[in-house]
Amino acid sequence: MPMSPSTRPAPLTPVFYHPAQHASHDFISIQKIPAFIAQSGRDPIGFEPFTDDDFAVAHDPEFVANVFGLRTRNGFGTMDENLNHALRYSSASLWAAVSHVLEASRAGDRIPTPASPDVDALRGASGIACSATQGFHHSGYTFAGGYCTFNGLIIAARKALAGYPDLGRVLIIDGDGHYGNGTDDIIQHLKLRDTIINVTRPEIGKGGNGGQHSRFSQADWDGWTRDLITTHTPGLVIFQSGGDAWDLDPLGSGYLSKEALGHRDRGVFGAAQSAGIPLVWNLAGGYAKPMQLTIDLHLQTLRISDEALASVVG
Image 1: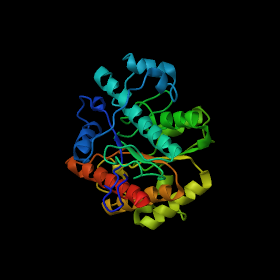
Image 2: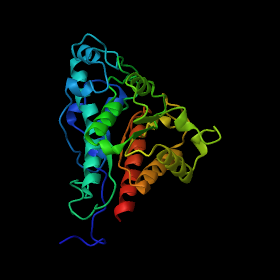
Image 3: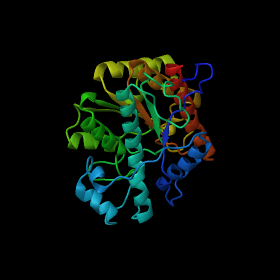
């Protein structure tokens, strides 16, 4: 018998992570992810790694072969077989999360997470899921850089469009503190502008009058996102929640307080949920130390994601 609303556990955002994502590299973008998982209060969902063919969806096959053949440096500036193996799982995490929310929305059924066993608990909700990954957006068609080797954003978007043609378009809201040059490069090279919309810096930080979002309220972010959805009519939103947009991040753009980051996340999640559009988000940038400062930003996004999910099913 289904649980009553009063006894039903609050739904938790499913988080897609595989331990093989963690490589022996001391950069914070790698080290913060298992720490985030440990503090997330839920068991992550696993998945299979990508093959070279999966990466070729967004990249020159020769570039892919050269990275894994240790002839071309990865986005971390190394030719490290252990780190490269972890990259097969990072991009696969984002696609697993995207596939999950699209299947859930197509079924009109619950998002099947261990934390939400009641079949009726999430019926009718558009999906939200988290990919516990760093950013991807500095990786272009034939190049790596800025700690990004392969562009999981474009790979996931193209796989979604191929597997679910009725999506029409995928909207990438890149809230990372830096310009997503690699994403734009691939979109231009593969002529994807009609189907993949990439909103990145500086567009992500502009209001209608050209001003920065630093003083935007949750309602402002909600309205901004609704306008994007109305303009582009996407069937899927991929949101890089970028902790490096925090004004105390040493490598970021420094334009949002922690409170303002919360306004951003609530506005983006709320607008997508109101429009009934599945959304997947990832951690992306965030480099403040002590590392717990950065993890706290990502945990704040996770709590807001849970709240958005609960507001629909509750």
